[in-house]
Image 1 (cartoon, rainbow, N blue to C red):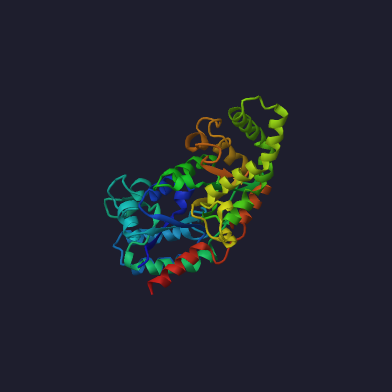
Image 2 (tube, helix red, strand yellow):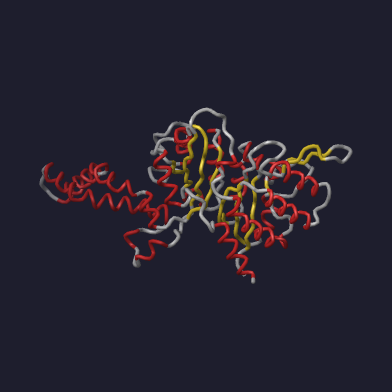
Length: 393
């Protein structure tokens, strides 16, 4: 039997109130693998179908009525609260995935105040003395009955292409300035050993006031990595020449009993600078993909999904490029301003927590490479769910 697949839908109000990072932190420290991510702007057809699934679950009152009313109030395109109906769909894979999400991570909908689950911390279920629901926020939608998970996943797969992708149209901005959409990639170090770092970083980006309009779990191929970081190849040749020359001079002084002239060292640096640039370039590609281009035995390996995991997010709003890069901090974490993401979570020039596009043109180029420019169909969410359901027989 394959490992179970389960989902969590982070609600529109949680996204609106920038609770997204905190919820992701709780979800990522579970003993489950984040398999896919996708933004959705649910259609009325999706909402009607999802409500039918909830009704069929036999959920007890007044929770059932609260969930159904929430679907109408928040999930519909023209909901009665007039807010963006964006939701973030996250797929998780692992042993007893549905039970882990239900019992240990997201938690049950409860009137009792608590803080040990996602819903306990970020949700509310306030009932009056007369038994009427005064206020309700579930924080996440999950499948309440693990046995019904295949039907829920089937529905999500059906609508993942139709309602999901880049949901810029679901965000309303004030009529001032020029809106930008920029790319952020949370690097592989953030996904080691069930870390809360991905959510913590998303929470720090929330201070920009920008809207998340796209999301995708990446396993970059070597070909994608080489194209993505391609501009660095030529930059490294001259930018790193000084380091090569310095290291060559030190090695030569130790190897020979005579002084090696500076012009000779310089010539050696010129010879080695291209080889060094290629080595450093391949090191970055290997870090992002888990495969070193120089060590691939078969050219076809360049097109295989990478071993490492990243999370790509699209942020939308006014001056999105500048706001994100300011919050992220300079490339070198040791020089980044205090309180920036890289100053807190970065280790060195390569392992510096996250990548962010530095211009509108580069954001477009990078988004095209990783598949977050046009809505890919079938999307990875649909492919993963379809494969999982097929494996169930």
